[in-house]
View 1 (cartoon, rainbow, N blue to C red):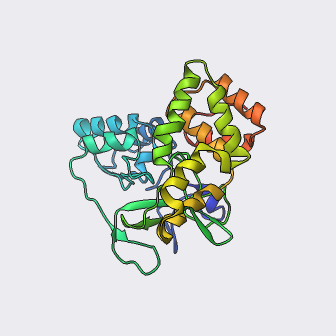
View 2: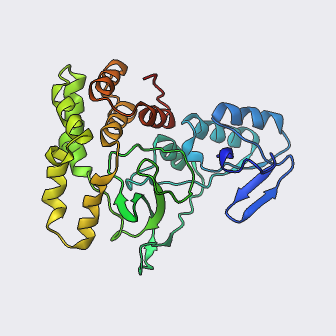
Length: 284
């Protein structure tokens, strides 16, 4: 749990939006599957375990729970997201959880776009800048730790549920047509094209290939498409691109990341925090 959100709550509190319930000895915290394994050993008489946000754990947790279930008959209930804001399987942990699950119960919500009440299955990530809705780009860092508080900071996202029509995801084509190929060139030793694109993203986004890609798809369209152009208003786009190429695609080396950060005078604090969120911490 994000304990920093509730500094005044007791240690045995199960927090929710309206307050908390005290659970006594029937609650524990685990940052990874190894700590969960310790909790299991310390509580041999507990037969049912609820593992909240299980997809945020390491992959090993799926096999740990499967093994404990077969060996000792334990029951594990795992409320978690299956799809991420990109409308893809959340991560490898979520995939393994689905493969090992006995029962899967998909739940839906109502679309939170104004005046829409359609069924919603998708998590929508966006940034709020001066009241302007800025959809997260496809290559936005996959995991961002921070809870569900409403934020008006271009570095910290907001979340809601959206239907297919109102779930905006700009930059997916750019990611696979341009950004990832540039990362692959860098992995082969030619970092200059990537450096040029990141320089545009961090300074003059209007001359970037990202801007050209979005302009061709959305600028002359109707209002819902224009909303997607707002994604170019968020700060730290170059840092987000680097986090995607390094933490998720493994295309950049640590030395290349440091070179790009130094050459472009990027936001070290923001990038370091996002790399840490995605379990690829790096000293910048």
